[in-house]
Amino acid sequence: MTETSQPAPRPTEASPGVLRRACGWWFGVALWKRILAALVLGAILGLVWGEDATSIAWIGELFVRLIRMLVIPLVFLTIASGVAALADPKRLGSIGVKTLGMYVFTTALAVMTGLIVATLIAPGAGASFAGAVPRVVAEPQDTARMFMEIVPDNPIGAMANGSTLSVIFFAVLVGAGVIAAGKEAEPVRNLLAGGAEVMLRIVGFVMETAPFGVFALIAVVMGTTGPASFLAVLKLGLCVVVGSAIVTLVIHGGIVVRLLAWLPPLPFFRGIADAIMVGFSTSSSSATLPVAIRVAERNLGVSPPVASTVLPLGATIGMDGAAMYVAMLTLFAAQAFGVDLSLADYLVIAGTTTIVAMGVAPVPSGSLFVLAAVLHAIGITPEQTAIVVGFVLPFDRILDMIRTIPNVTSDLSIATAVARWEKEMDVREYLSADDE
Image (tube, rainbow, N blue to C red):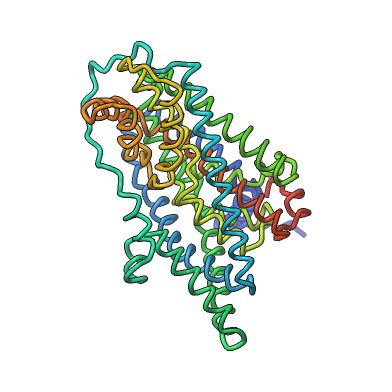
């Protein structure tokens, strides 16, 4: 009896198994590792490809649009549901006071760090503005008007316009109204909680596209700016790198997490890696907010009421990196123009920067729009300010990527500390934060 050979399997029969294995390998790697690999590969591609890398800019823009799409609905639903879940209005007051106090505290420390580092490195000494094209920046918004506009005349319009502070204010009122209504509002409480959970799931879906978005964003930045042009502001860049490292590791990791929250810093930084990578690549605290809320609840064990109250507020006013940078730019300008600063001037810079930094827009290069207010306080003219901004602006994207990291770690470290103080934290989940 002759043996009959079995027909070879068709390629279409084997492909599903190969696809499953490939997907299993891809999703088996921790997200932050995938993002980090994409960041490195994107940087290499940008250096090799040069300005032609802009042909894939649409991928990065699409990722940023996906993230920004989630910000306003996520802010409203998470804050409203978080406040409603507190069940006691006094708890909201306690969380709010501690949060605001911590943001002022860390911002002041970040400003001091910027002043000290810029004094020691002296980035403005010998700086030449010969090739700088003056760029006039708009005057910062009046502080009284900024506080007035927190109360929206049309909540739906505030959501449509992306007015985060106004949305936060309205969401807090909705949550407080649910608490005051009691049992009759239980369906609304459940609806808000369900909506917040749905938004976090959507954030998870969008984050799976992060490696591709980060790859494109970094490739475009390196292709159009590149490290060679960065040499023109090397000393200022060194200030930003050193200052950001001190603020992130010492102030946020050492003081806030270790000393004030009584927790080891390593699980903190391991748990927030995804948010750091997204913040670095997008240069936007606002765009990082959905990811920050997700990692705070899933990796750090912060309860939804605290995460949804602290983090949206922090994305708007928690600008430690921006505060540090504005302080550095102020000394840079003073050194470049030969302005002698007294101790009183340093105190004026520190106080003014701490205040105006809370009004920095959570968007790329937002720090430059409040610089005029601080420079004016030490006698730098608007014309000189325009020259400084024109000198820095071509390189600001890279500097902005670096200083966005302390903005992100500020929000998450304060959320961790407040949750710890309010006993709204799962410490076991925090300590078990791993490469998920």
